[in-house]
Image (cartoon, rainbow, N blue to C red; front, side, top):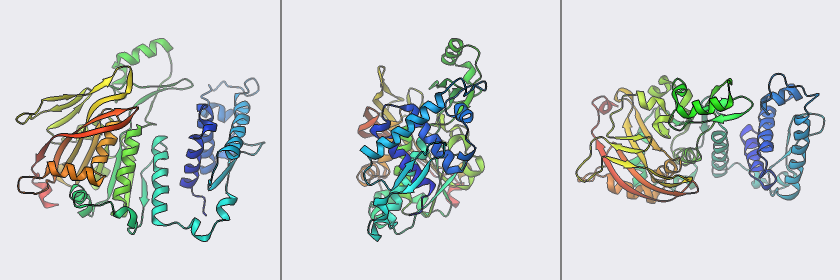
Length: 422
């Protein structure tokens, strides 16, 4: 078995989710940090001082001779790795080791894996699909995607192809029939990084130029004193990450290449040249706010605004978040199928304010039974499926997990003149 970077990252993710690392964020972060340095070939340059600065946020005045935090935590990490393999590892394909006297992680194929039958290590399409989606979750969750990453999956992944039904075919027809590349863009919220201290986020602000006007940020800055600050787009929500996995898993069975990028590095050239799926609210995807799209339904910080209410429809659908439990509530998500800039190409927007609702919206356009229900509402009186539409889904979630979702309303749009030519 070839130990690729994605396979190694999958193993590291398995370890940081284990009981051995459950109670120690410090060692989870340190393991991932050393893994990335080892994968990239940078581990040989690592010194105690460098790790102190990069992994522990120490100031430039940090002196390893007087502060033993790196040596101490490296020793404890080595013990946790040992504990994991002694008590929890079951059928892991890789053994990770941190030899004494250095900071370079070693990765070896486990004896169990090499001793299996020839079929046990064969890369079937189904197994490759599983590895890629897990690796995608790790990459998104820790936001290590610095540039567009392209996923190749063979068209003969027959197990996943069986998920398609006529309604899913109708929903994704613009992407399946197009010869343009498919791009998944994941919304990345803005965090303010205080080097050596941590991160701060004001949910109402997602623009670096506007952060100074934030009353919440001013209060934090006043409490911490005069500190250097940096913008950071290093994380995304679990709902957005989960939605990306659902969409990529489905589309990869029909499209040979799917590209993945983050909203803060998406270029207008990419948006014009690709059919794009936006995942996450417009406030995380600035291109959506400035693209001049024609929309009846708009996500606002407190809910969804209906700019053109039809008879019996509300003009505003508010979100209801439990003040004491931000991971619980009832909100709405928006699924929009829209023409691309200047009417060329196609855009799909899957968005909600609470992350969990974004995941629920993705379920409605990737799961056959959900797609059947949605298509039943969207079809016109003549039985045709509209190419352009906006649909609102109501979502109840608990502990950040959608537990119930239902259709609320939708609007159908006519095709713009330019779109009818493509």
